Length: 365
Picture 1 (cartoon, rainbow, N blue to C red):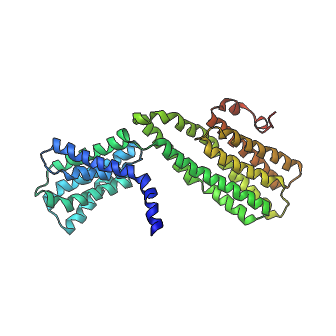
Picture 2: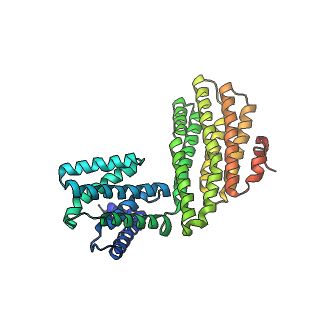
Picture 3: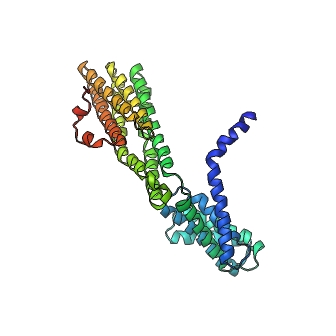
């Protein structure tokens, strides 16, 4: 019980600002609707603002507009039809069907369609108690509430795009680093099942990569629309440029894990330098993950990648089976990908882009 109470501040800290924003949106929507409309209690303006802000927070502009449109559409359908068919259990079900059908026919996605249904239910359940007649004021209230939510979520108090993108990027790096660490341990111990698990982990990075891409698109749009967030555009571009190489590193890691698994299953001896080389790739990945906030770690990331290439060359010279040689080649490819990514983060990518693989993996000095 005491530990739960102590955890409350940490639990509330990331949610406090969105809660304050939602309360501000509800107040602003109520105030604007009171000034603009004759209804003295424009509850639907506040309701629409809260629903839209909660659903569209951190979404791209087009998606947020669709969510607002769903709320407005549901209220429009309910406003017109309640006056014709009245209210009740059957009427509520019919209104939900009609609102969702209208949203679907207008090309709305899953979220727009569900928001239309929720809005229709709210109007039917709350409307009769607040007004004996349904007028166009409900529609105008929804428009005011939706407009306020968009202004707050996109212009005045947008989410931090660098934070959103950074969290998505760390999920990718965490998955890649863990897969490489697991693969290194499997090669060291001759554990084919561990190598299979590492391969599965590397293959499972498609979803985090897709989420990163969506977060980056959202972040760029937020930085473009919100004046307060424009200074982070350079940081977002670093993520965008370097993650092309991170994507290559993930693909090469999958091929590396596949050849390593075959080598272990064949029973052929694995060169001792190969597990160490894969472990260096993992260290390069962890350093690169921290380089976006601390660019000086780019040197450490590049150094570990260079060390991986050196160990791969030693493994080749020591003699290896065909599958092991294929794995060694993928170690070198992954090392190049990570070195180029580090150069892009550090802003020294020009030379790395033009340099051949052998130069990128050649020891310095």
